[in-house]
Image 1 (tube, rainbow, N blue to C red):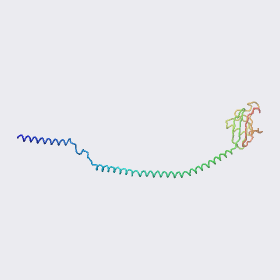
Image 2: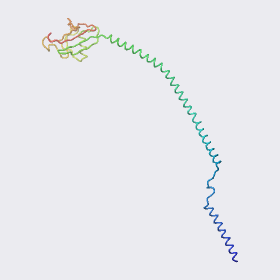
Image 3: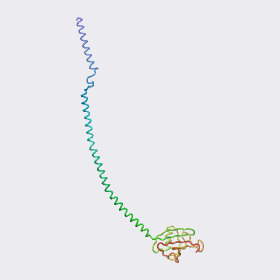
Image 4: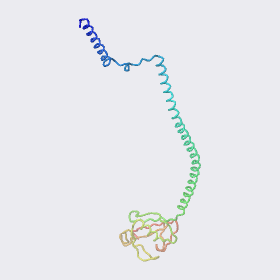
Length: 223
């Protein structure tokens, strides 16, 4: 084999090595075409933006169409509630007026009846006067046939005062009231009674009172 053939063979081997190395480099290290960004023309970009805008508008219209019935339903419900409230107010007003009138009339009649009852109540004024001061005084309800002694006993019971007597019925004689007895202030001391400012000539058990009488029991120290 001559030198020319050797060189030719070496050259061919080197070429194959270079070609193989270049292929391996491009396969491993060269950026792939798929990873490169796609460059769009202005027309394509405008078309894409227009499509996206149309999709957004359609979505908004769909949302509005879904919300509108709800708001309309709310408005109708509110209007119904207002109309019902107005009807109830119109219906209630006359009844309140009638009720107030009905309540007012009986109250006036009740007050009139109470005043009549108060005016019709009969009473007598009874006073118990001790040595130095009034021991008890009040109006008591009058009853037909009430005696001066009966009036004294009712007033004494109301004031939790004791009454000491002798005799019974029309012959009753008052000896002491609330611990203040006859002869406590001498031999002529004791209890007397007046009716309308005068001393009756009969005993307290036999003196029949009248409506409005003024009865006064007085402890006298000199008879």
